[in-house]
Amino acid sequence: MQCFLGIDVSKAKLDVALLLANGKFKSKVFANDAADFAALVQWLLGHVPEALTSVHVCMEATGSYHETLACFLSDQGWMVSVVNPLLVKRFAEVNRLRNKTDSGDAKCLAQFCQSGRPERWHAPSVSVRALQALVARLDTLQSMRQAECNRLDVAHSSVADSVRHVINDLDGAIAQVKAQIASTIND
Picture 1 (cartoon, rainbow, N blue to C red):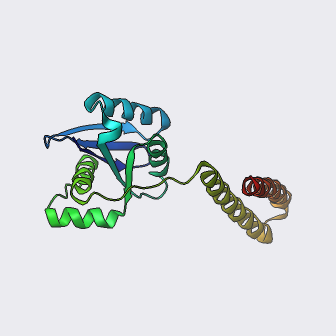
Picture 2: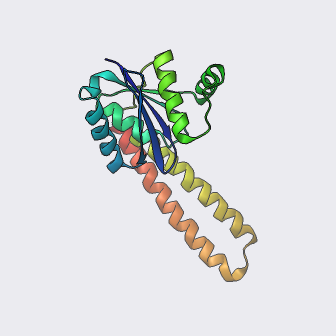
Picture 3: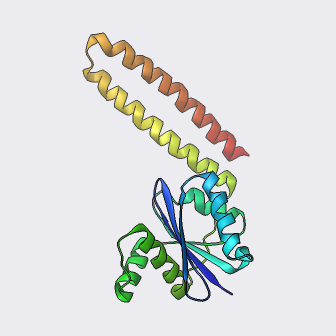
């Protein structure tokens, strides 16, 4: 028995729609956090006891909001597909499914998964995820430093020392993250 789970991911919540083998849907909303990821798995197992081997999970690539859930499920052995939102949009248009609600989007994703059987998404290794997070953090810190340097160029003398202090703190944080990156690469 093959079932399909569509997950509409947003920053705060997950709208899920489970398309059962009999063609009926079961829907629920979960918070987009680690505690509710476990609750989602329990909910799935409550509806489909053999869910780990018979449920195909499908979600759209939504910037960074989908990544933690996709990694969580993939790490546990779930069949997860992360798909291009444009493909789902075109599928919905062709099949006249577009109900512009989060619940409707989750159902559309489940139907897209059933129809197209998208390929399995492979989560990056834990070390690659750590490296990606560190590089993103480095980019952020460097942008913050550049913004403070720009402020220093035009800062009033009453705040110039404060800006220099922030730049020095950022330099320290940048050096620390660079050291973590080097250590992660060496490991």
